[in-house]
Amino acid sequence: MKAAVIVFPGSNCDRDVAVALEASLGQAPLMVWHRDTQLPSVDLVVVPGGFSYGDYLRCGAMAAHSPIMREVKARADQGTPVLGICNGFQIITEAGLLPGVLMRNAQLKFICKDVHLKVETAASPFARNFAKGSVVRFPIAHAEGNYFAEKDILDRLEGEDRVAFRYADAAGNVTAEANPNGSARNIAGIYSENRRVLGLMPHPERLAEALLGGSDGKLMFDGLVEALS
Image 1 (cartoon, rainbow, N blue to C red):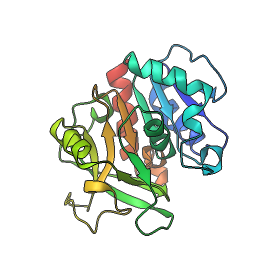
Image 2: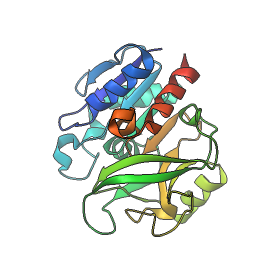
Image 3: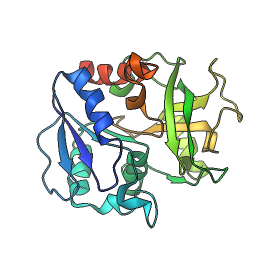
């Protein structure tokens, strides 16, 4: 299995993702610069977190028009799995790979802390190692993680079982108190129609080894390797 990490000016989690992927893959992923127009043959594309283009204009809006994103979109249309984390989630929604938008946090403040997530569906390569209804712990670090979509889109995501994770407490209760950013229906991540694209606001790569305080993120990357190899 081969993986690629897209690198933008302002990316700050590209190396974190690369380290986590290498630990699961046994080989380093390819690092692909945003100005490249060709994407090597890979089995997984990761659009990492950070502050692409300094988050000037609107988060992810400029990066969504980078030359490499045309190729990422084409590969996604062909069924290549794409994982967008934090700013990567913002980028792939701006690029039209997923519906909805990521807005300013309800508190209008940057938030950096660990959160608990309830796994809403395990029917995807990204959740291969998780059970539906289980709880995982990932960190968040964002100022614009407030997922919003019109009611009909939210209802469609629910009806098609495309809500991947919701913010919850440690016991898995989905409550307003467990929602760190005001996200609609406590949504922390969603899938595309074919479940091959995941947009996820929290950072699994930041808790992917015990020395970092937890390894729930490694379960995701290990599961991807198992599913895609």
